[in-house]
Amino acid sequence: MLDDESSYACYAATENQSQGRIYNEAKPNFRGEYQRDRDRIIHSSAFRRLVYKTQVFVNHEGDLYRTRLTHSIEVSQISRTIAQALSLNETLIEAIALAHDLGHTPFGHAGQDTLNKCMHSEGGFEHNYQSLRVVDQLEAKYAQFDGLNLTFETREGILKHCSARNARNLGLIGERFLNRTQPSLEAQLVNIADAIAYNHHDIDDGVRAGLLCFEQLNEISLFRKSFDSIKLKFPHSDEKRLLHESLRHMINAVINDLIINTKLMLNDLNPKSIRDIRKNNLVTAKFSDGLEIEHIKMKQFLNSNLYKHAKVTEMTERAETMIIKIFESYASNEKSLPESFNRIYRDTKKANKLRAICDYIAGMTDRFAIAEYERLVEL
Image (cartoon, rainbow, N blue to C red):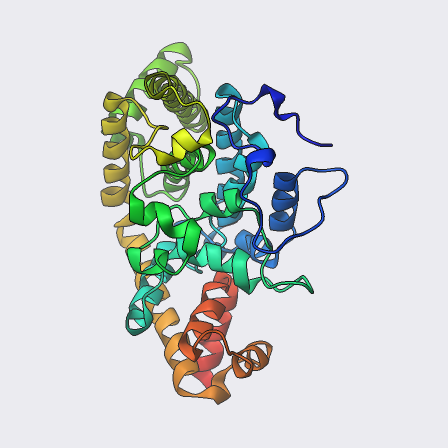
């Protein structure tokens, strides 16, 4: 079923204003272009692998912790709620949300930081840039082209951050990083929904893992306000329900603030089309100043109390050891390459050998990387 774009705001992204695909294709008969993007993302190999890539905890440490896949679905849900409230393109925003983490490495940020060090001499590693590489080049499903050949608007949203060096090689899609302008409002909102999702679900996972407790969480003003309200309303509830209700209350307050403040920003900007959103040098989708400060404090709390917790740090150090071992083994000894990668490595023409190795490692799941490390140690 084709989307009805007549109800969208004048500044929303629409297919009739789309900047198209890199390779021309016949229009689909019974779905829109952004629906096609979303469907290609869902059917991609990289999307399936997200189920075995983790946020904070290594995949095999527990079945109930968030993975990159469940995180992407949560970002999609939050983004779509906001899109409806602001009369934006819900299908496009869903496509961006589902694809935004396709370039993430195994072992979360630990893997990303380690690959960046390994690739220092070759331009480093950026997970957002890698997500774009996945959909533009690395997915190999179609006879006519490499990648998924997504629309400009979806690709624009996937590339949330980008260094000037990489932006210069991306043509039109990299220009905003050089000109200091903004992407579509749909892209801006997925970026914020990403932060909302991981800030809130990392609290949930942290408590589940026994690394955070209510006493600590009450240091977060956003959480404390919600918890006090819920505790007063349900004084006899157990801690599990209190935590869930507090997080639900808090995330609702954060989303409401974002929607209300973004509407105020739009009233001030008074955009007549998506071009007015893009040429603006300030972010249009944002929290109110007060909530922005509180959200930053929550992120700082998680950084100090969860991401730098001894258990997480121990995992981070193990992940770094494994990634370095895999990378150095592949780079120094072609005989160490797994058969599934050997042909790709031999046939590499567009990218140099180290970049091909980096692409392969970045695509690994946590459990595959662990198994590969153990195989290489035994060689």
